[in-house]
Length: 225
Image (cartoon, rainbow, N blue to C red; front, side, top):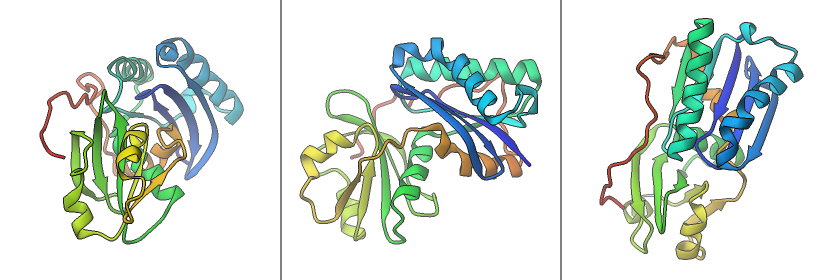
């Protein structure tokens, strides 16, 4: 049975989970971006103890690599690199937006919907991507300014758009009464939602280069909306 350590530090929520096969054995989460470096080691230890596992019994570590908080992403990736280097353990890197879309699909399944996870950037800016229910990418991750014209191409082509994440509140003020747009209010930026993607990549031996992996900051601005 595959044991995975799952970590997300991309937003103000720091979360850790331990999985065995397709099941989450235990998860921990704490709020406060500036606390990530302080709380992450103890959260991992708490998860291991609750799951009755030792770190050397973990088969791989999965980390969400962004976009998100620059500081949070650096803290998480540095921590995971340390574990994987010391124990010669495989590392699995996963887009934070894909992780969030996985959570949205688990919470609100709809075969015909487009899922748009949003990460709060600044002012009315968000980091966005679009996926179908199979987690296939419809629109690659990009930065966007939320306006009345946002996602008009997707709205023209689809009957339902589902939006969630830390940037959803900005969108709600613009689209709250739109007949085709629906919102997931649950927390979706959580490490446990890495599991389906991480397990697939582990089975396919799709591992990241520990030495050369970098956070996906999505710094460049793109006029796409």
